[in-house]
Picture 1 (cartoon, rainbow, N blue to C red):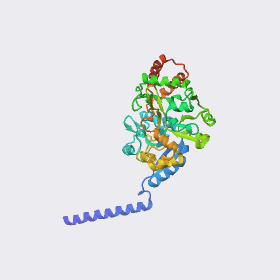
Picture 2: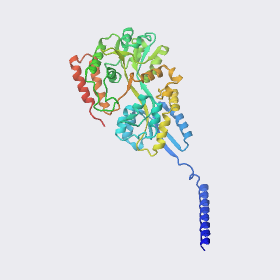
Picture 3: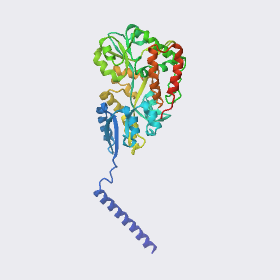
Length: 410
């Protein structure tokens, strides 16, 4: 009896298993999507002028990841913070943004931490790029490019030796600067780094970490004041291009965004180089610039975090960065791509890569409080250059600037 029950039970199990198999087979025939991986949909925001790069990059990504569908929307990467603040739910899962917004994005809970690819990015991207991608010890960004100011000059008026120091440059030729107008803070604030001071702490994240109200800071203002009497320094702003083209100035400081205009103006006579050295009163030191790091980020409330991180990582990879340089001419942050022949043979790219090194530039501060610095510093630089600030007032003015620049901003 017991033996029969065992046999009967075994038969029943076999029958049930067979029935289930038939049912699954029938279901798979009638519903082909059941066995297929569910499609993951992502939205990507990129700058309009990078369209040729990312149409191809996304096509390649989707080919390698057939279960992910990416929709590209074109916007302005500098508006990333504003757009996410306005409506995070409507924002793209993956988006471009400049690294100086990382502090505000992260502190407001708008960025998804890079929990999967931080280690691999640290091994492939230059150190300064990863500094820009990190906030309070956590990696949030995926670097895909860098930008820095460089020296543009007329090779018929200045030689390679002439441009090595500010003193030689302004003796042998004339450089156009905007010391008397808006934007002087962006170009000349990094002189505080050259002098040995810091803006917002050693990592650019500390609201009360600016220490320029000292003798180093005063040396910067003294240098700026002295340029008014330097015959080799010409005030230039919106007229820089025409001054360069007419030969009234032989050099200027600007970023990759000016390249096409200057190349059109000077043609083969356009020279591009890293910044010169400068003497702030204690000997020649490398003149520094701000480094900007171009990043991809993943929004905090994405519904597909793994797929979004995978896409962001792919877009910061070597292949995508090579496409970016070829199609959009932005300068890569990848160590490997920077060493490529294409980069090394390109005057602008090589100069920016050189400027991205430690001692030549410092990543722009990431503290949200940097907004206070911009509004307070321009007038100080302008008035100093114009001779409106006496030597005795320089330190008090710097103390006031530090106080204003250190106010917290969310």
